[in-house]
Length: 160
Image (cartoon, rainbow, N blue to C red; front, side, top):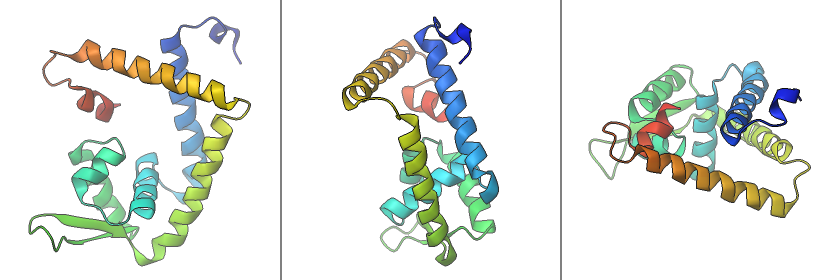
């Protein structure tokens, strides 16, 4: 670990963790030729079943237009399929394609491995303290956006 991080501020450390986590996930996904966004979409569909676009976008922290582009690319690759939602005439349901279930299960195991590696060496109480601290930081940052048009907390998260 670089000496520069030893006394770094919490914002810097949070940024470094995010950047490194994205790098680890992206490098682990390279053999699958998947983006991080496609990875999360497959995991959500595996764990929660068919989903319409807006709830799926919320689950994977994307705005609707980005989620639409990701899903379109995944349909073209045969990873997911879409069909009309029988309960709502204007919605589509997004589901795993028939051949994607095994891939999604393999990716789920990869996700569990990454999650375990991320917290390796941290006791349960340390993890909870860190979780509460990060949630407090998120709340603080959301509060800093109040009153700023077009920068609602949901947009700030989706843009990151």
